[in-house]
Image 1 (cartoon, rainbow, N blue to C red):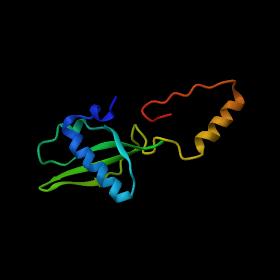
Image 2: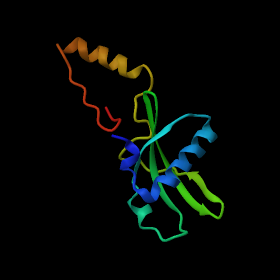
Image 3: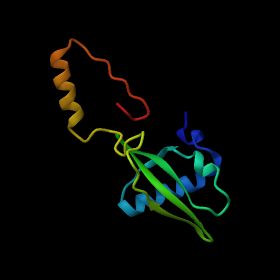
Amino acid sequence: MDPISNIPMELRQSGAAAVKWLNEKNNNSFYLTGIVDYESALNTKSGQDYEFGLVLCNGEVCVREQVKVSLQKDGYTFNLVDSATPDIPPLLDPPEGIRSTWLTNVLQKHEFIILLFYRGLW
């Protein structure tokens, strides 16, 4: 299933523009896989600023960025928002090397393990 189809239609344009802005700003090539905490954005009045969390992936690495969106005459402007500990952490995938070390340690203690991945969380 295409993850973009899970994004509310009203936020697809600003979400895509925010990803483009983040990629240009950070010299990345992430793609949008979802938007979280968007309910208040849907309830804002026309012309008001709003926030949402972008779930971005690039290969095996996924991140979450909280973005403030401002509508301008010629498009959007964006700012990163420092938020309190979110339900979905900013780095959805463990830092490189931690997962393999963790797996090795756990497999030494058990005959087998079951890994459950849910929306990028492990």
